[in-house]
Image (cartoon, rainbow over all chains, first blue to last red; front, top):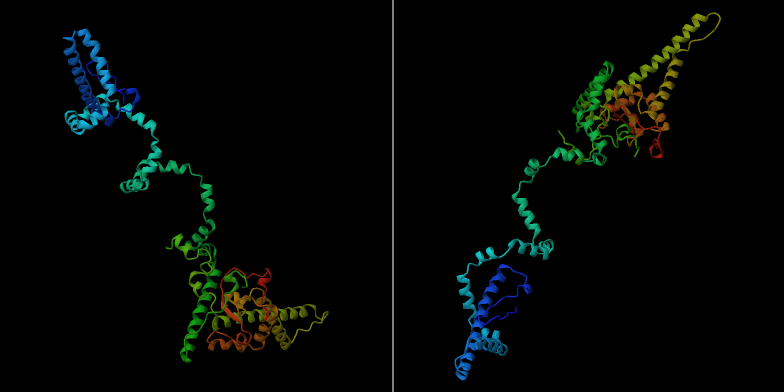
Length: 254
Length: 184
């Protein structure tokens, strides 16, 4: 940071063009450094005054014109010969100065008054790839999980989303292609026992009679077998035939 | 009620060997060995059918004789000849029936089917053996009363089975080599 001494009174003007980042923290730093430079200026001024007194003791009481010419020159010469920064750093309790300055100043208020925060934020956002920063620095999974834990997503969708409109845009053909239509049809046929319905609606007296005769005959088979099995001391009959009849297995013959 | 998912998990189509064309009360015992009564009634129906046919033939010949006498001389066959023809006709009838659909008219009416030891359709020769045996020794069916597996003497000797099979679906007849009838 460069400073320019304009007159005998040391006026410190920060060169704003070289530091275009007027953030709140930098503003505070600038105030601090300003205070430090004031101190340095005072030191230079003291040196200048001493030089003026020396001149006055040699050349008699000065006139204002003489002083106006001599003091700045002498001050400049002193400043050039002394590393003011080193002097300040070595001799000044900067921390105390800064702390006092901070106590006296309402930095927030100053920043709010003096800083165009909108511009600062926009400039910061322009210079930063926020997306990249977020991707690198933010645990998005945790944030999403936390958000999902907080939200009742189902209720939210039911409330906010027009599901009918959404479904209306869906292309159903691929979905239907993926559906096991034949399986579904067979399931329905089995569950409603469609053959039984067809039999009941189309079957005549003859088919009913045949079914009835068959069932009675089967019952007689069972009854007769039980009687015989009781007479003969043995267990129940083994009626499972090996393999499956063709009409049941589709006639695969395997 | 079984949901579609449960149904699919259990195997989906083909999970059940029950033929839906069979009435609900009869599905449980389809494929089991048929008992004596059913088989006896089926045989009686078949024999009655053949007997009726023979009587019809004889009656037709008698009528023709009466109509065309004295011009045509047709001698109605004797009872012994008719019975012999009845035996032959029954043998052929059962052979074709068992070798094709596995059941005769009586078998269809009573819902039974004759199958090979592995549950397939009989070959013609096998069917001829069985039908001849049945015609020659009809009392062999009585063993089904006593047999633990409802087997007649013919079934014991030829290892065939007679099962309940009410299904409307006919067995596959016109199919490839894998479906050729068994010929032991």
